[in-house]
Image (cartoon, rainbow, N blue to C red; front, side, top):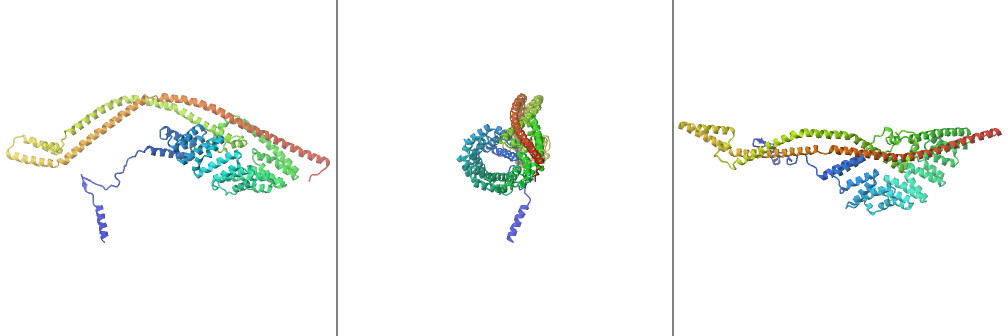
Length: 637
C-alpha cells in the first residue's frame, strides 16, 4: 500500500501543470540539447561515403563508373596516395582495362608505404596478376612466391596457388605445380579448378594413374552451376582421351559417358565415344553417335569429322547404298559450309564488321559501357560459328576487348563533343546576363550597406545612452507607452495654475503613477536591455549578410570575366585530336583482328576443301567397287 501511495504521488507530480514563467508554460523536453539541424560531414566521413558508392558500382558490374568516381574524387582531393583501399581498387581496375603502366605505378607506390600486411599481400597479388596477363611469367612467379603473400585471405590464396601452378605447368615443373594445387581448399570453386589442373600436371608429368584419379574426383563432383558442370565435362573428356591413348577403350567409354549431351564439350565427346566403339570393332554402336553429331552445325571440327565417319561405319557394316548416300550428304554439307565460309570472308572484310560485332548486332544493353562481351548469340553474320575457336583464344579475346573499349571511349568522346557547343552557349549567355544584372545589383548593395551601417551606429548609440542602473530622475525612460503618456499629461497639468486642493490631488496621482512606474521599472529595464541587445545582434547579422552579398557579387563579377568559353573551345579542339588518334588506333587494331579472322577462315576453307575432296573420292571408290562387282557378277552381302 505504501509503495502504491508513493507511485500515485509521483504520478500526480508528473501530471501537475507546469508553472508559468513570463506568461509561457514551460515544457518537459527530452534530449533538447541534441542538434536538430544538418550536421556537416568530416573529410573522413565523406571519404568513406564516396568509397562506399564506388564499391556499390564495382559489385554491380559498373566498373567504368567505379573508375570514373575514383578518379574524380582523387582530383577533388578526397582520395590521395594514403587512402590505400581506394588506390588498390583503382589499380585492380587499371589491370582489368589493360593499362599496365598506371596499375604498376599504383602498386609500386603502395608497396613503398607502411600498410597493413593483408593490404600489402593483396597489392603483391594484383601486381603478379598484371605481369601474368602480360605473359611475364618469371616476374609473376617471383611475386607469387614472395613471403608477403602469406597474409592473403583464404579466398585470394586459392587464386595465388592456381596462378602459380599454371606458371609451373608452363615451365614443365609438374611436380611443383601439383604441390601447389594440393593445398587449395577442395570445397571451393578454386579447389575444383585446382584438382583439374593438378590432374593435368600429373598427366603431363607422366603420372597417369594419379592424374586419372584426380580427373575422376572432378567428374564425381555434384552438379552445381554452369561453371562447375562445364569443368566436369572437360575432365570427363580429358579422362576419355587419356584412356583411349593408353589403350583402355572401356575406361575411355565410361569416362566419355559422363559428358552431358547439351554441354560445351558434347561434340568432342560424341566423336571420341564413336571412335572408342569403332576401335573395339563395334561399328553398329558408333554409327548412331556419329549420325547424331552429323546433324549439328558443320562449323565444328568434330561435326565435320563425323560427316565422313558415319558413312565409313556404314561401309564397315556392308551397307554400301547407305554409305554412298552418307558420302553424298557429306559432300553437300561441305559445299554448303564452303559457301558459308566464303560469305563469312566477305562479311569480315567489310569496314563495319568489328563495330557490328562489338554491338552484338544492336542487341547489347550492358550497364557498364566498358563491360567485356561474353555472349555472341545475337551477333549477326555467318562467320560467327566458324570463329568460335578464334574467340576462345586468350590473345584474340584480349585484343577484341581492347577494341571494344576504344570504341566505347570514342562514343563517350563524341557525346562530350556534342555537349560542348551547348555548354559554350550557356557560358556566354550567363556572362551576358551577369553583366546586365551586376551593375544594378552593386548600386543596390551600396545603398543597403550604407543603411546597414547607419542602423548599426544608431543601435550602438542607443545602447550607450541607456544608463547602467535605474534612475527615477527621468521616470518616462523606464515607463511603458501608456505610463509615458500619462506622465507627460501630469507634467503638463502641473505647469498650469490650479488651487491647492487640485494640486494636492494631482500630486497624489503623480505619486501613484511614479510608484507604478518604479514597481515595473526593473523587469521593464531588463526587457529594454534585451531588446537593445537583440537589435545590436540583428544589425550585426545584417552586416554579415551584406558582406556575403558583396562576396557573391564579387564572385559573379569574376565569373563573368572568366575564360570558361575559351577553355571549352580548347577542350573541343583537344577532343578532336583524341578522336583522330582513336580512329587511327581502331583502324590499326581492327586490321589486326580482321587479318587474324581471315586467316582462321582461310584455314577452315582449306580444311573443308580437303574433306570435300575426301567425300568425292569415297563416292568414286564405292561406285567403282559397285561397277567392278557388277561386271564380275559378285554379290555384296
